[in-house]
Length: 272
Ligand SMILES: Nc1ncnc2c1ncn2[C@@H]1O[C@H](COP(=O)(O)OP(=O)(O)OP(=O)(O)O)[C@@H](O)[C@H]1O
Ligand SMILES: [Mg+2]
View 1 (cartoon, helix red, strand yellow):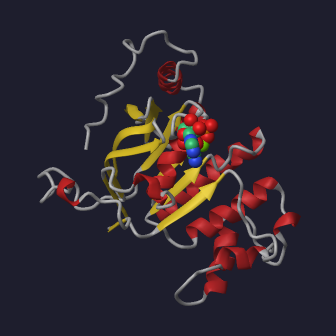
View 2: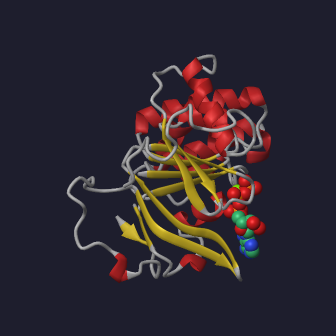
């Protein structure tokens, strides 16, 4: 477990964990605040992810999802001293744009910065895992958008991260490719078991993939909902639809007018 330098307010760190707390977290945030000038975007985020937990983060556009992810990734010095942010050292990132380097072949992109034995062989294995065997020597521009996202996933997972941070990784893909990517991500997750924090606009994506769904609203985690649906999850399942309606209502989009007849939005997951 590492703390981003300068980001920890030492007196706020509890001296010892609560008796029922897990031995370690992939991510632990307490009262994380982010201001831009006078505007407070994150009002004090409290969130903990256990190792191997798959969490989706929903929220209206501009609600601060990317801001929070950047803070967790250690890409934002502006949250310094605003609370506690403990993050595992082995973090991988993935974004809407695959961010492959255009001048490096796909296998070199995946292997870039890899330490330890056999980076090339590990890159080739990772590419095979995402269905890109045989495309190792392709240039990124020779891949379709979906293939580029597969390569980006391979690059993220080849590092065997303990925490995968993904900011709308499928946001730019067509609906069919997105469905295939969902299946692939879940399959890779089952195999590698990193903790995942997936930012998405897509409520169906969140319920289909995650075991816990959060809604960020007004700079706070307003909803923390456990998804306890058996695999394979189908959108036709009434329980799926119920969760979907509840989340849509929480997002102020549609669905149920009030959440009172659905799961309790704040108490389905004990605060940690
Ligand atoms: N560098 C910055 N300077 C000033 N304001 C910023 C900056 N970066 C983000 N913001 C503001 O912070 C708020 C949250 O932005 P953020 O990108 O985190 O939203 P988001 O939830 O990821 O939205 P989207 O779903 O559209 O991606 C927005 O109102 C945005 O304008
Ligand atoms: Mg964003």
